[in-house]
Image (cartoon, rainbow, N blue to C red; front, side):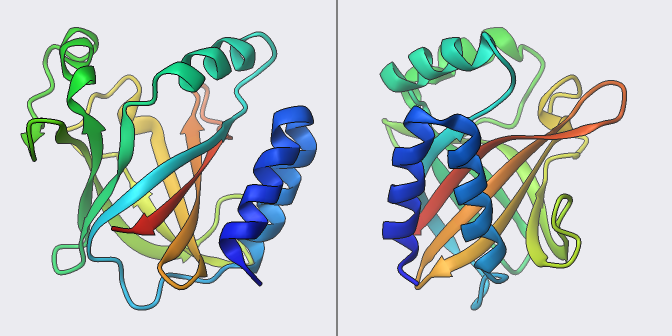
Length: 186
């Protein structure tokens, strides 16, 4: 299995047939395993695709094709925590959208960290027969209306290469798979 090549193929399918692309990504995800060794340090991220619903998908595709401030994640295996890495050009908008959030951390003049998560191994939401690394954003420090409703799941699909699912919990209690992303060791 060549994780990077398989994901690139699934991403190409996704561009033309969203449901088939998601199915191909899910097959790759299910063939993965929990990260070993544990993730530590910075990982570059690539947003693969979003599926939230007709109409919204097209708007999201247009925006993310032109601007993707999410750049990856940073992991601390000792504390079983981590943060997202974002481009500095998104900080002004982030402060408008989340005016009470105080978790922004400077990395460089081009990047910052935000939206902490805790990590643990557990069965997958949609894949209860698979162990995955959960990245749980339901922390008191995160914005309650949206960020705390996110649960990422991660599996290793190649050496230092990982595929992730992003789930969102709707206000009525239902979880929805909304996106796929990949991470690679920097």
